[in-house]
Amino acid sequence: MKRKSVCLLSIVGAVAMVSAQTPSRWVSFDSTHRLQYGTDAHSNRIMDFSHAGYRGGGVALPAVRAARTLAPVAGDSTARIQTAIDQVSALPLGADGFRGAVVLEKGVYDVTRELKISASGVVLRGSGSGDGGTTLKVSGPPHRFLDISGIGAWQPNGAAVPITDGYVPAGTTSFTVSAAAGLKAGDAILIQRPVTEKWIHFMGMDLLERNGEKQIWIKAGTIISMDRTIASIAGNKITVDVPLSDSLDAEYLNPPGASIVKYVFPGRVERIGVESLRVVAPAQDVSINQAQYTFLRTNAVSDAWLRDVSVIDTQNTITLGPSSRRMTLEEVHITHTVPFTEAASPADIAISGTQILVHRSTVAGKGVWPVVTQAGVTGPNVVLHFKSDQAGVAPHQRWATGLLVDSSDFENGTETRPSVAFSNREYAGSGHGWSVGWAVAWNVTGAYLLIQQPPGAMNWCIGCTGRPPTILWHGNKIAIPPIPSDTWELPGVKVEPASLYIEQLRERLGPAAVKNIGY
Image 1 (cartoon, rainbow, N blue to C red):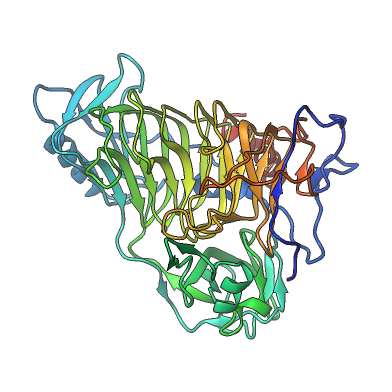
Image 2: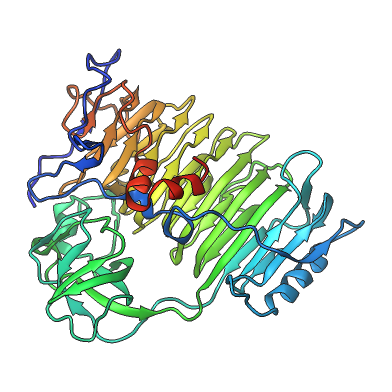
């Protein structure tokens, strides 16, 4: 796919002279008030992001019965809490898929070591995240408060099957394989997108240098995988449950070419929740290379959630690992009482998984990145009704795809710490390069919006209010190009629908699904 050269889309000065009723070329309502999607010459479109979240979106977070209840006591409570988690983990799964909740009554609990949940169907629940609720006070050597992880990784179940289409557009759910024998609806598959030297060159990522040394963006031979389930098969045409977050262009991916492979993941745990509690760590301003107090890491987990959680004075607060999927973070509020002054800033919510919904959450504090995506992340991932008082959402490195930042407000961003950054970070870090493609900012308000267009892909900024920075990540001044190209639409004017994610969810699953998530 040959596209125009990289450019920074921009708005300058006041609100553009457009009507609030002007429809987006990319997403708008048709005459029956249903969403219709514009496409480019290769049928790429904005994807349906509504599959992000617990159980694939539109499912209410459950109220799980109490199985063990603890009251606060003087001294270290780490062992007591872990023992209760282990006891509940040993209970049989109920018909609802849960073993039960460990409930912490109101009060303060001292925690000096990491807690772990490694069984399906377990919930850790406090008695409220506010004053007078449940507070877990972290102390001792810097450590992670909680790890939620299964074991292992995806295990191929059979040989890979080539995808034969010359071009599969981003946002589609269907493609053709060489042979569908042995595949059936319900099979879990990985859609495998190889990183080739030809694609790296097309992206301009073979030219990265720092201090005279070549930087590696993504190593040729790497496979970027999309975790999907087969919805239906017609001949050799496969339809999957969730749209593709990236295009598959045979011109740049052959050889070896894109493929699919069935998988099993016996060690992945599911239906795990953390809710209604506050975690407080000692405030410290240290390098990200030093030991830190962090809150949560997840991996090998599906269908999990955080709800009504307050976290104070952690660093690199939440890390959602590559095999985390279908998770909701709702009413998660992260606060820093001291600013971070190190050049390499911590990230409060770092997303490496897929189908993640960060919902009605906030970050307050200086010197942090509130939300980032990491290398090779495949969406849909959604940040909805999010607020921060400094920077905002900034994909960090090495080609994430399928990110929506929806109806969110970011105050006090700067040119070097934009409110939204869909960009080529070039040689920043160790050659972070193109950080994201096929990303959408929808009805976002921020101080600075850095939106760039990758070769062969798009990033959109629709109904957004903000101004472009005049510097890139490495600090060099850049010329501001004219107002805007066709993927920065309606600057300064809120567009309909007010929330793209909520409207997509309504159309896919109906009004009950929207009510299930609080609307």
